[in-house]
Length: 314
Image (cartoon, rainbow, N blue to C red; front, side, top):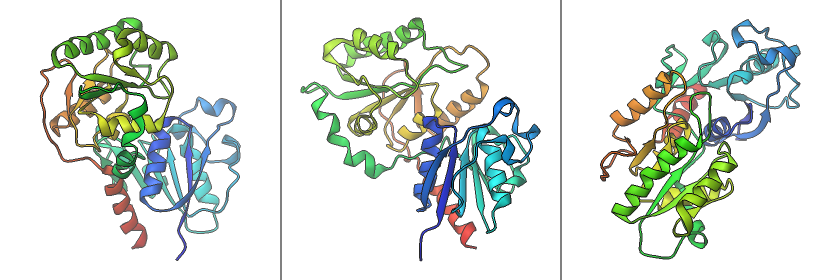
């Protein structure tokens, strides 16, 4: 029996790509990924006030698919419209709260901290993603040519980037880096700094300057370096702005510390996420006493895929 075909729709951001591709791989479907582009004024209009029409978005050049997986506000209307005009049975899955009538979708996959409920809602603890334990293990040795060859244990700092809630100012970065400086004096570990697509280049250079030659700062976005750091590190630190990378790190079962940044505006939704992960014994805050602890590895992507597979087959 041939595999089902998937059409993935996102705005092209790393966190969204990770979620749709992660679910597609877990569902074991062949897929193509399309970056959604809305036309003119529709870029600014919420989905609930937008007509379900081809006039709203640039045409998607693909009509051979069985499943649509979308993520992000801009992909809501294209997903609904493409399902409505298809001549065959299409299942459409939206990741995150679509902010529109839930009945437009067969499944909505949303984190618990979004606080939405319904018959077609699958709630997750944190974000689903495209990482797998197999990939992490396979890339373990990748950083061997980068890191300093000595007996120190390895910690990694995984950095997101500025958002409307969190500012990557020199002041904020210095606060986080200074906490590491104190910890390194006490515990003598080697730090590996991993940037993401959102990390400002000046922040990466500042990390290189601050930590010096005894530590390793990866200067470019490098997925293999990211996977290797997750495999090699005794402790993982992730900046508070990235719920997706905190969720990805939770696949390892290793202690995760959250590097907090004072928010510019109310970040209650992100606080709910971080509180949940703390209650699940996954995270602590950077700056708290260093300790070792265990938790059940979090693999929400495969759990969600199993639920969807069973419902599609039935």
